Image (cartoon, rainbow, N blue to C red; front, side, top):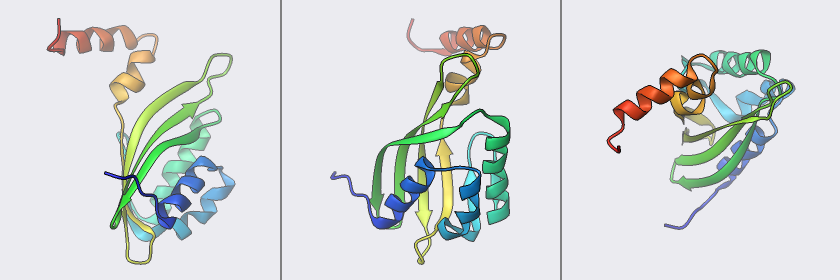
Length: 145
């Protein structure tokens, strides 16, 4: 299959790779008013609710940013793979690997946004107190020995 990025997907990539608190005011150009957003921690509908998810990200994390690694558009759907980068004060950055599936409305805006990433591997296993337990449980449940 040949990778294809159309104008809608290129616009989304540019937006997320340059996302700032100030640029959240431009979400209406990207999402329909009743768009749905889902990730491991949020399941919301509506432009204001989606804006709150991203506002919360900027309020609680230090210098969050996205790097899109690959993208493909087929008909009214797009897949993106990305790294979400968090700068930890005094420590090296964390990269969370994930993917997004977008569904576009007839006007080219996003009507469904679903993020896929593994919080156990990408987040919980790295935490000082929770990490050892998550890593042990992962090994215990693994089919490989």
